Image (cartoon, rainbow, N blue to C red; front, side, top):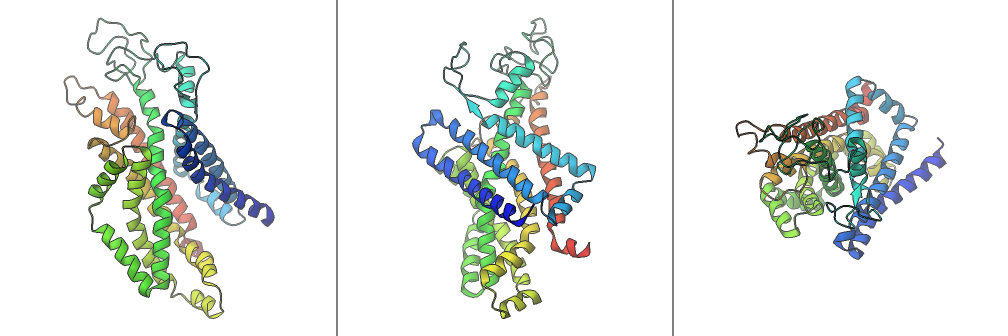
Length: 382
């Protein structure tokens, strides 16, 4: 791929990123809550297009592409990347929704949208997902109800992970939890990573009063207990994906800012930075060409760890009663009392906890591989 093509794709990628931000804001101001699924659908298409283009740019780069392809040759790296793609695909399928022209049932409200995941699950089980349920609890692959062993199930032996107290399929509920987990993991990073890098680089490179202001801002924010600040923001903004994502982003950029500031202070004293300054190279070029590339591996590590921490933080919020509906955290919170009864109902917590564990593990594997690939010190050793 020549430079002109790469520059063209880079501008397209930048435009799509701006669309990811602009479309939800524009449509959110114009659409009522009943039509907000259109915002999720358009945003998902924009995010998928930006994600695909970014992968093309990385894997076709003359230098970084070869290193990235080599980094994912080990089997565990490939499995981790595959799991990330699976979770991302499930979340995207659940976000792409549309309404049917006619509603021929009484279980689904007329005009209520159904996602691509809903339709795919209904195609897999052979019946609509809103009809694939029982009266109450049933175990995995059970043929009778859990409470009344003499009562046969409507769909005997077809519930892989059993059903919940209201008869819904537990596997379907676990699959529906992928979208809240991915959104809660990604949305705060769109706020915390740019803010942490901006303040950290400015404070570490320019120093003096700029650094004093940066230190004062993040020290003030760090002095407030993060959980209390997060709860206050969620209670003030409302219990929604956007509110929780914004709250996690506000409390999550301080740690990245500290690391970036300290690393920038060390980088600015290196000989090639001093030489570029003496030659009259503009400051913005020094920051873009020399400082930021040396910070990329730190940003990736912190972002991946933050992704995992934010997904787990939503579970804590669900335990406190301010989490998201249909999320893994809410499923785990609802299953707390179920596993303590006799006989215990363990299958509801199994699906949510397994999905949470696999998502966090796969993201940590991919982040570790990418950080080693983009670390300039590892490059110089190789």
